[in-house]
Structures are given as C-alpha cells and as structure tokens.
Length: 169
Image (cartoon, rainbow, N blue to C red):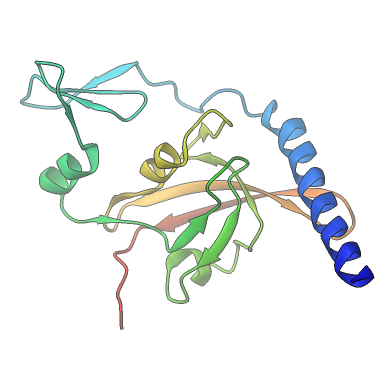
C-alpha cells in the first residue's frame, strides 16, 4: 500500500508539473500566425462559419459543420490520435497505423499547444479542439506540442501530418 501511495503522489506531481508548464508556455502563444476574420463566407451560399466552428443558416438554425465539410469537400479524416477530455489536452492514445504514430514525433502525454497556428487555450472545449484537427482526407495539419523531458525541462515539438481515414480490420 505504501508503494501505491508513492505512485499516486508521483502521478499527482507529474500532473501539477504539466499544469505549471502549460500555464508558463501558453502565454508565449497568445495569437495565431495568420489572423482570420470572425466569420468566413461559404462560397455560393448565405451561410457563414463563426470562429467557434459553429455553422449558421440564414434563420439562425444550427447545423453540423463536419457534415457540411464532408458534403462539400469529400471524406473527413483525422490523424489517429486521442486526447484527454480536459485541458491541458494531452495525447492519451494513438492508432497503430495512424499518421500520428507513424510520424515517430508524437509521444503519449505530449500536451497540445496549437493546431495550424491556432493556440489551444483552456476555454476551448474538446469538441472544438477535435474539429480543428479533423479535415478533408489527404489535407495536412500542423500540430505543436509541449513535451516534459526526464531532465525536468520542456521541449516544443512541431509536426505536420496528412489526415487519413481510419481503416478498421
């Protein structure tokens, strides 16, 4: 039982260390590389997409943005990576044949800092973070991670992945 208590305390300290790193590092990334307008016009349509990723029709009815993208551009795909449900968003799993694992650059427990230059802040719900990662099959996404090193220092990791539809079986 003493061993279990020590393991539990080490785990709590690891989480505290990552939270402190998250707080220290996120201030360095407070704006995007290329600012975007609050609303972007969807071609040949009276619809607009807001910064939050919500899709609005003329009458104010909500519609799933992913469904629109799939219909307009083709199949939606990801990078074969699972994130924790709460910020800071950490890599908790990777598909064996997915782009994330094949890159050999992403590790479990890496903390996601940015997606395509958009800084991930604590107020982003996980659904919004996922919607930034998912895109049209074959398109690329640039991810930025913070990695805790065994020396106690932190490393920033950049990786560009090509989105791929998961194949099962």
